[in-house]
Length: 447
Image (cartoon, rainbow, N blue to C red):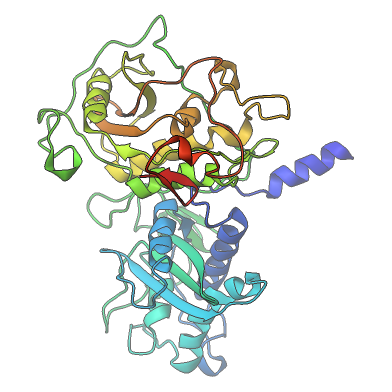
């Protein structure tokens, strides 16, 4: 019976693998099911249009997948605590606020249906379904070209702000919101994206069509227990030889400082706010390990971007190895993607998510008699580098090799090693006085 229960739990657990601590997989699942249930009404020609009439039946109509980057864009919007937050370019955004309650779950559950139903019941969808005044929210959510969505929320002074970002701009006024016709029954009837599938009258997007609509890479939630692959801390005895890198001219370090030449792709790809979030959440005790939350950090430093470290990361990534390398001056995180055309921000997020999620299925030695000492046997080399207490700088680079993309980050000063403490446990910021001139901001010792 216990085994059966375990199987049931694994079957229904949805893991989106997003690194946004301000939301949960439960909320993501709630948002996603809500919008896809509504979109299903289009292909079913449900009689839920204005005055009980049917929606014009949709054809070549797609299911939405959750997108972690769109979620972050939505989070950036609600973090401003205002309704006129600027929508990200090339996307469509919805945002609203409602009076907060002690249990906002019901409010969040109804957010997307409220946007949809208010437009439908007040204005109605014509045949053909052209965008018009009064259908602004519906047109964004029902857009036939859309395939991805991300939503987020924040409580601002007793007002709950909710935002969703869709990966396609809303159709212009007078333009069709979706195609009208018979819902799909076969894969070849789903034509907007190559290799799409038809499932229960709804299309499931394949890959972008180079001659038509293009989209960015999406991380689709899985229903299996999360596993991650660890990266060796040193160069293995046998590695693949160097391959040719792509020549691209680019500006490299922030603040206009160029630390390397123009023959490698470099990107200050993870904003300082993102790095601070990883360390901030850990310092405040919000990071989950396999056996519970990690303990708080008493003197976690706020990192700054390090241009010399970036130059070093370039040198390492440019060798196009297939594993991490050792460095005399820096600790290294390494990640490789089997594509040399993947969009930079997507590659960066994938790398950061993979590194950060190492701890979700593993642990740190934080028992009452343990001192949080690192060991390579823990299987968390990349996560440990991200939250290593004495790291004060980070520099990163992306390099396109002949068949893949390498992402490397170098941390300074070099500190990581077996039998060394990852971070000092204790009440958040209790020991910030060890760093003269710092104060506690978001759980981090900040200059």
